[in-house]
Image (cartoon, rainbow, N blue to C red; front, side, top):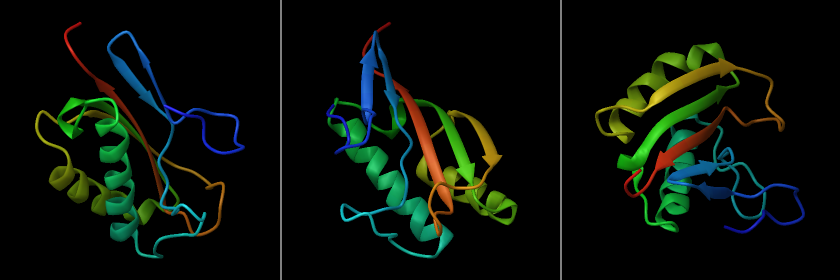
Length: 119
């Protein structure tokens, strides 16, 4: 996958059978926040993850680990409910931390790791 504009990182890399992805945030192609609502931001991020995975022949079923970054502790329970709907069982392993986000208004960032093909 290509690097992201002028930013010094790559959206995803395949190493052996692992798809290592940069974090997905709820910003559109113009760099604007898609919504102030947590659930809407989550859904946008998951659609972005699906698109990125699809570019390498993977799906959400192939996700084995999530790193979730929340701007607000109070969104943790909603994150759990949304992950239950978005990711099939067996659920990915997950780490969730509350952090100051790089841009105001971003409530969630998700960094997925997937496995494709046979090991």
